[in-house]
Amino acid sequence: MAVTQFSFDVRVIVPPHTKLKKFFEELEKGKIMGTKCKKCGKLYFPPQADCNKCLSSDMDWVEIKGTGKLITYTVTHVAPKAYTNIAPYVIGVAQLDEGPKVTAWVRDIKPEEIKVNMKVKLVTEKCEDGITRYILKPEG
Ligand SMILES: [Zn+2]
Image (cartoon, rainbow, N blue to C red; front, side, top):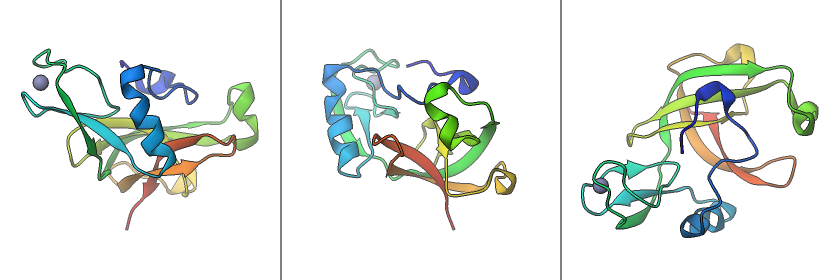
């Protein structure tokens, strides 16, 4: 999935691909899963059904540890209609220690306290709208 960091749509995190259904099932249980190519070892998060690097479709599910650092972020003061009650909110891009970059909400920290390069961790959280998402939280 191509995600440009500032047009990130918080409603759709992963395309509703049947092969990736497991991702949502595990997310509900509090586990964040990525896919790893069995052929070349490349790790994908968000998970992908096929490897872009070697074009293999032989992928394994792996649990993401989710530690990393924040590369960039943006504070949204004017939210889409469905999110006006939780604005302002922060969307950040983190570089995970495991390799992939991830775009997600940054929560549990005031926008003015967020710093680039701060340590973050990807965790699951049941949001105000009842949907369980992966989000970034400050770590340490
Ligand atoms: Zn591969």
